[in-house]
Length: 94
Image 1 (tube, one colour):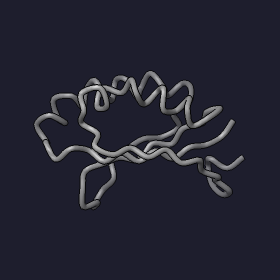
Image 2 (cartoon, rainbow, N blue to C red):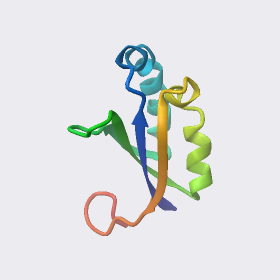
Image 3 (cartoon, rainbow, N blue to C red):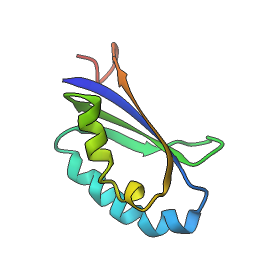
């Protein structure tokens, strides 16, 4: 299995994000027993966003999961990057 770092940049619409956040977090919780290892908001970033860490067979597999995130389906993510990540130290290292 490979590791992937995902970065989200959200729209600057706090009300829309707040309204959809419960569904977004509920969806991510369904992934915690599988491919999602960690997720959380970026703090102090110029634009609102988040970092998510996945373990999956491929970037395409991660994108398939991300496409179902309510923040994505409601068009609250303006930019999304998926990069293969090689953790060499720490809790995610092999």
